[in-house]
Length: 199
Image 1 (tube, helix red, strand yellow):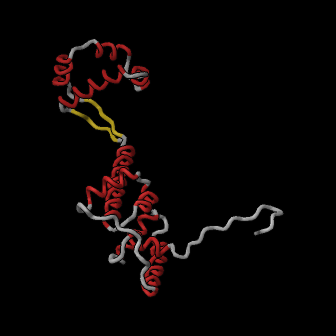
Image 2 (cartoon, rainbow, N blue to C red):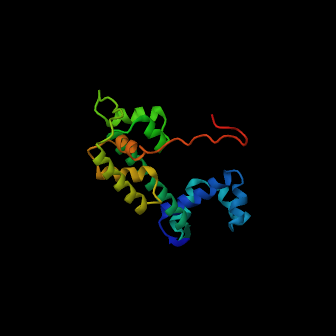
Image 3 (cartoon, rainbow, N blue to C red):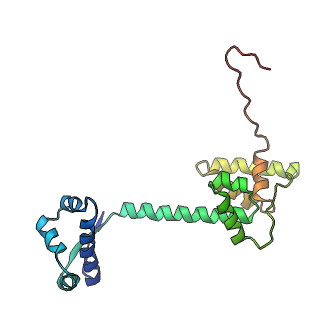
């Protein structure tokens, strides 16, 4: 928690007005009372006109103001994550991600995908479909690079690791690389129930 003195009259007036607005909110008075405001102080503020608050703010020498640095940092980090996610969405769209891939990695709706495609891609650009996998030699290189990325960035989201892979193989679309790293994935066979013979 950061606490410091405020001397700017405009900010002081806004703080006093905020106290009054808080009183109008549900459980606002209880919150202010528990924060240390006296009933007399709150009653005096509530009955004052705006010009009185302006006059008081201009004559106050100082007012103490506190900010939760932890909460501010959490919100700033949240904004940074949202910005990085938006940039990554745009990158995937520009580099051939299919609708299915975007829905899988970003939980985007069809309308969101369509809007971004119209915004980011030249008009008349057809959606890039799935191309054949690269030659075996290139696929081996992709798998090798993917293994290194997974070891070095094990805690990153799958989409971030796929982005790193595309940085190394930019001549292929994102979906082609995604298909390549999953080429050996097989659906798990259903396990027979106890006492049941496999077909």
